[in-house]
Image (tube, rainbow, N blue to C red; front, side, top):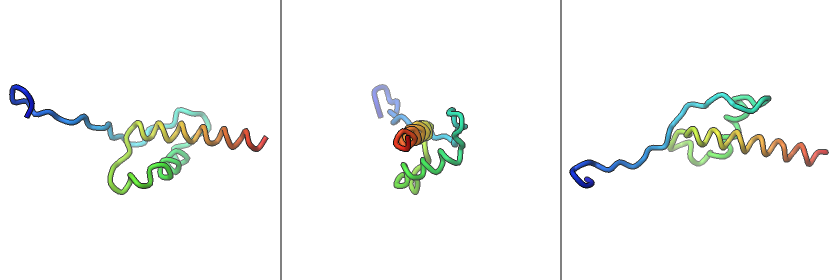
Length: 72
């Protein structure tokens, strides 16, 4: 316990269900598949956080944009 008998708690990561994608043309299924690929090792033990979902969508968009540039 911390000072004055108050238990100190570790901050909890914000666990979340998958939000709707913010990027036009990107579906929840696309983000879900990409998140699975990115966080495969984490999933058997923990649920994804809101931050994980956002990072998966951002990474997916960046990957798609990079692939599009390479095909030009």
